[in-house]
Image (tube, one colour):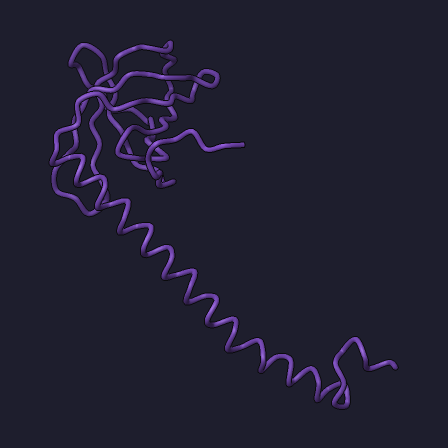
Length: 143
């Protein structure tokens, strides 16, 4: 299946304040799957497609909130909303872009470290298994 998304997304969860008509309410709703174009929101409220929502959220380690208007582009049942940001400021767009890039780089470095660790420890484990099998590989020990 072809990915139709225009922007890279980061899968994580943060608190989001939601509202309509400029009135925001703090709820248990969570903003997930963030990109510079929009997000996925798990909401306790249901909103039909094309509803216009006001959002307020804070990126981890940030001091300022991001406040914007978003349109509901799709829903999946009662609790899942796909929203498109309509009026992100250039500064907020840059903050989201930088946050996503930093998180993806950190995740890639973590995966690389894990692979390097496995590459270093795996030969040691094979050597130990060979010595226990009389110099043969484990699968060859009974031959």
